[in-house]
Amino acid sequence: MVELNNEVNQRKPFSGMRVLIAVAIGAGLGLAVAYFLKVLIDNSPAEIALGRLRLFYLMVISSGGLGGFAIETMRQLQEEATDPAYRHSKSNRGRRP
Image (cartoon, rainbow, N blue to C red; front, side, top):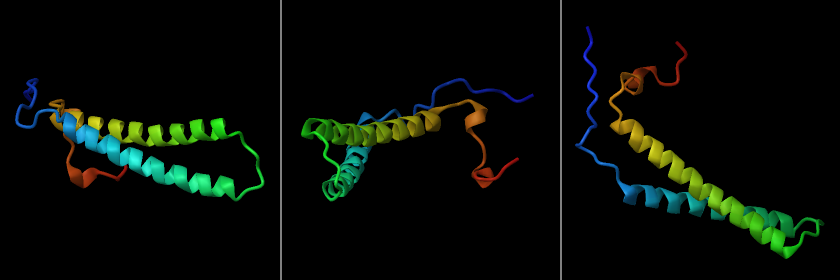
């Protein structure tokens, strides 16, 4: 019978600094997308209120940061998980069973 190890892996503790770096990278990518959209909107005939545009850009940038936060947090939590469902071999990734 297979024994389940329910202890948390203490070799690599959760790193908040890596999450903050991922948030900064995600926000940077969001900033690049927001700038691209700004150039696109500025060169279109649409007339949009400046306040709404600023809120839209803020939403795009914060979405990038939130995406970076979610990806890095889930990656670290999955790395620390002891459940065998998270411990599949890398050779099976991307293939359907």
